Length: 239
Image 1 (cartoon, rainbow, N blue to C red):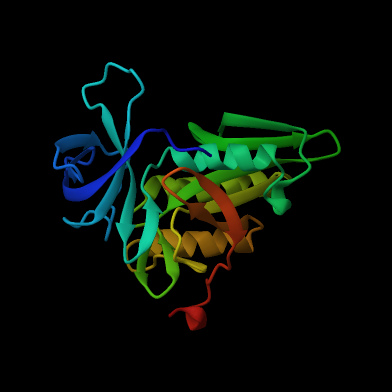
Image 2 (cartoon, rainbow, N blue to C red):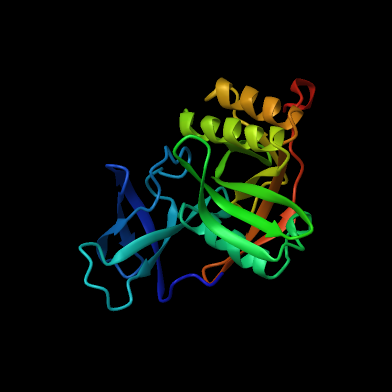
């Protein structure tokens, strides 16, 4: 997936009110950018971090800049939470996720569960439907371990229960974590920040929901889904 161009580099001054980020560009210009991320952004909102922002292409917006990437601990991190679904759509179209290849139709934002919408419904006349939920992951606190969520995620726990019900009804269901970082090679649910979600992910897996984790290759020009990485889910496997 190509990132919007042109991009400009600078330093993060502050991220505040969830959707605002002040950045000093390398040329000295002070800007306020839209931050397309409602989450906690733990470790990614520290003043002084390198930041990449995109400029709106002719759009009349109150904030003409968008925060796209942050440089943390030597890694590029995608903070735009709109990108994972776009990345997955592109990867599905190219059959770049082997576990999800071979479906004739990829439908987006399909109603399911209790007043919810699943990110993708994959269909083929010769196989059961596959309900696919995508989660953005950009938290890293220790070593090369990516974690989700970075705060209590009650809505995400609800999605797990709804995926489990689809499996019970005879369909296939997949929880896919897209790690928008370039410095992680394994994934775990963040049990200390949201124990209910961590327990729910294990329960969903035991009930037949498949858990996939993929990292990304990231540059200021593009992001693409790259490699599958392992899910570390047993207590003995924790770092």
